[in-house]
Image (cartoon, rainbow, N blue to C red; front, side, top):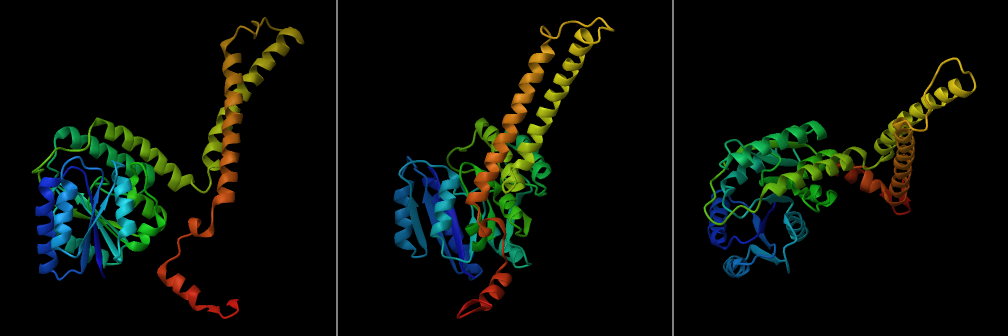
Length: 329
């Protein structure tokens, strides 16, 4: 099967020529039928000029250029749309990802998987990037149910059918295995070698981890409650409404004991903070449940069967085979 290698580029002019040479060497050694798609994500250096030079030398190479920096997810989406192969391989352009790993990814995929994620067994990065990444991967596993060692690894191989069913935006590119797993695709991982950076500087800073955590919340909601938002919003709203109702019920009982059945000496309920908290919780719970109902209406009127159910290639072939001249049999 033809392999499409998608490489997002942001100010990596020094490494592009060497990266292309390494990929070419691997393709010749293993007789790979491949294409290379460089996506220039608004580079400020001469990366696009270097890409054009590589395109002239190698007909298997194509280039896509953004007018400005739109982010890695947008670059990968553009590359996947331009890809012509049955398999799509993602890697970074900074030479920290080794193209020599490509054959083992293909071999692993051929064992019956749809997505193969890389795992940097020995990561050559500063401690302030390594340890937060460990915590992040642990949180992803706990919140999504997909146990992988390294969700942040840039090396990923998946079938073109996976790319057609998942949508990337923002910073969701690191969650491709999670999104595919939620759609019913089979996901696994392989250990890879991580190389030290030779050129340029890292594009990621402290803000990356904050964005990653927020994106994790988004992915958890999309994969767990994307088709049933009321199950989460409604439960949260019902809990808030229940707490507020209990508080108001207690205050109502206190008022009755003070005015109707004056058996005990009870303080007035007006100055009590519990009254304000109970009213706020009741109103907030009602609003959250209303948001859940609105979300359910949006999902109901916008969702389609193809967005809800993932059909395997075999099942789709059988379905197509049962269609006659007059329609489905």
